[in-house]
Image (cartoon, rainbow, N blue to C red; front, side):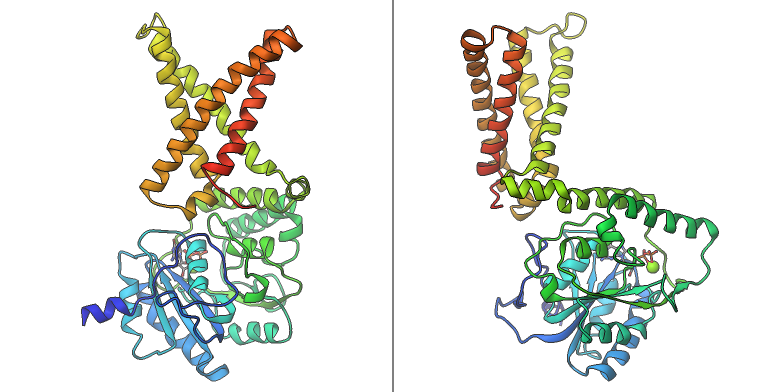
Length: 413
Ligand SMILES: Nc1nc2c(ncn2[C@@H]2O[C@H](COP(=O)(O)OP(=O)(O)O)[C@@H](O)[C@H]2O)c(=O)[nH]1
Ligand SMILES: [Mg+2]
């Protein structure tokens, strides 16, 4: 019995957060028959809500498109074992599938992992806490049937609203929207409720796109990176939660701003220019900033080890240690930030160690190049050691970036 139970869970897709054109069965690798609609329900600690929402959604969809839909609960290994409750409902609701994620966390990636395992031509998301009225589903589906690539349930169009939010909460929500309009007008301006977590999208408008969200607002990512030609909106009233509690904290506000800025860089003019000249400017800027942080690490360690007022160790020995610690610092930051999308596809310690090893060798070669260029420029071109050094540093940085891009974090852009 218990073996059967584990088998009935959906395998968690891995690798980059990309939606494929067809929908391979993740457990067998076989392309399974597609269906019309897949609705993902992300959950974290929703034990008391899950049964009710599955029941209502099934009723609505059984009537609207019998057997042509699936519900996918994606639970992040909730301590209240929401996934287990969901699993126990699978006999009663044959359209229900359940994924339990233990390695990754976070609302946005949960939704995308669910879509990756989905078989539907239309992909949707709804909260698992009954704050999103299930009745609106059919209106959203009609929007898509009438040709929209994206149908969003909105609190800010006719028929929409929030039930009993305080003035402060309304103000914060509107403030966030205005901020979005300033930083990312081309995306946020296209929808009346860019914070909505209740929407559906045609697979064809999203396939092949690699999503890279931070935090809660997956809709921004879908509109920002997908190919949404037409968007439908349906008003809805955001109900109060009856069971469980919200997981929103101040961190979601920070994530939101981070997300806006990241999307701006990824979709704005910098990106277009970068594509035109075939050089990843954004990545290079991040690499440069990381390099700068390494300078500070190097200086600080050098001070701690070699300064007469601290440990007073010999200079060369101190410098070697300081340099290596700075390389380590730079590697960690580049792996987690500059090349995060690439390292996500090559997880595991041995892969990471390999990248670190290559990074180390390339940086050492970069150092030699640095010394060589400094000497050449100083002796033959510009007899000013500081200008010559600047040129040498610039050339070595480009070398470090380019060779690491091609060897350590191999990307095919
Ligand atoms: N899988 C998963 N679901 C989450 C996570 N955080 C929140 N959720 C779910 O996402 C939905 C919305 O979250 P909630 O905290 O209610 O946000 P709020 O409605 O904006 O206050 C609910 O169904 C949560 O259970 C998470 O980290 N992972
Ligand atoms: Mg909620």
